Image (tube, rainbow, N blue to C red; front, top):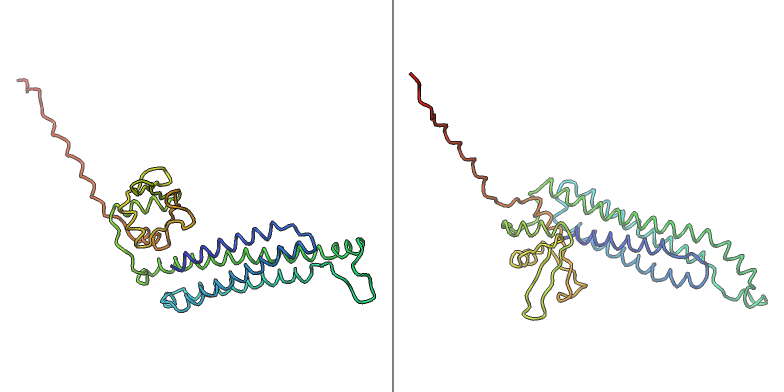
Length: 269
């Protein structure tokens, strides 16, 4: 679902913001080497945001009341991300590089001149990178806001919910455990036996687990190996299924009727 993509985008914007914040702002060639890949990254994230915006704009979500606000918020992310790229471009412009001046002058600046140029550029670079980090933080917040807005709109208007499989009690219980976080899927080298551990170290049965995975209510981390263990997380569709369905539980047994008190004493005449 779009919401999962948006949450991943938010995480990627946040990670890039942290890497920009961690930069050691020292003017010169080394800073340029650090800035170049980060500018490419923010352009890549901006492109992904545009893909999400176009996808939402062409989906059935646009008929859901309140969807305009979410689309507007995501369009704002494109603006913030583009501003972050521009701020870093300003840093490239403000960054003094060591090269020869005009013909007839010294081939390269001496140390005193170089230090003066670096000192003059330092506050401009610091501000440009701080502004870029701020815009990246706004981008991450905008992605989260859009994702939350989509979920809220669908919950308020359940007639627009995407088709979700009806969960059995066993599947609902397994999904509840996975939603709490910390679940791990592993497969033994011998026999290919699957083991799923919940965050509380309890076992999740494989049959409901695989049904949930097949219906894309959960997903396994693609980075790890099934033999070494893969993290398992709930998807947006899974959360919607949890929030809109309740397992059919057996009704509680009625309390047993108290036995009648039997008089044991005889009436005395």
